[in-house]
Length: 268
Image (tube, rainbow, N blue to C red):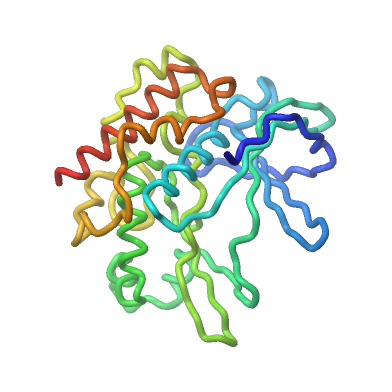
C-alpha cells in the first residue's frame, strides 16, 4: 500500500535546502540516490532548524497519490518510508517521500513557465497556449484535481513539459508535487478541527487565478475529467496504514475536504 513502516537507515543521503515558494516558514529538503542504475528522488516534510521536521507534506503526497489512482488520473507514484535521516549532524526519525524518475528514455524536462515564455505568442493566455499545444485535457484534469485537494502551490515549476527531440514528442508530465495541499498549514489537532475544508483560499497558480474554485470555469466538459467516480467507501483505501502516522482529526478532516469538494464539483 506504498507505505514502508519498518524503519530504514537513510542517514547516508545528503539533503539540499529548497525554500518554500508559498510564503510559509521553514525549509523543504530534497535528496536523490542512484543505486544499480535506478534514480530515486527523496523529499522531507517542512523542516525547521529549531523544531525539526514539523510538517506532514510527505503524507499528503501519498494521500493524493491514492486519490488519483482511484479517479484514474495519470500521476507520479510515491512511497512513504519510515526512516532515520541526518541533517546537519543530527539524526531525525521521520517519514520520507520517495519517487522514481518519470521521464522516459530520451526525454528531457523543462518547467512549463519557462516553456511558455520561450514559445507563447505575444499576448497569448497561458491556458490558451496549453490548448494550442494539445494539452487542454491534461490541464483541465490538473485544475479539477487542484480544486479537490486545495493545492496551494501549482506554480509553473510544478508543471513540467517532457520532450524527446529525436522522437519529436512533447507531452505534459504526469501530475506531481502535491505536498502543499489538504491541511498542510495545520500543525495541531485544534487547527485542523477549525479548518474550513470548503473555503476558497488563496493559492499560487501558474494557470488561471488565485482561486482554485474560479479556475474550474476553464473546464469545458467537467464530467469527462475523471475516469472513475469517488465514493464514500474509498476513504478506507485513502487512509489505509496511516492510523499511526496521522491523527484521526486530520484523517477525518482531509476526507471531509476531498469528498465534500468532490460532491460540489459533481453538481457544477
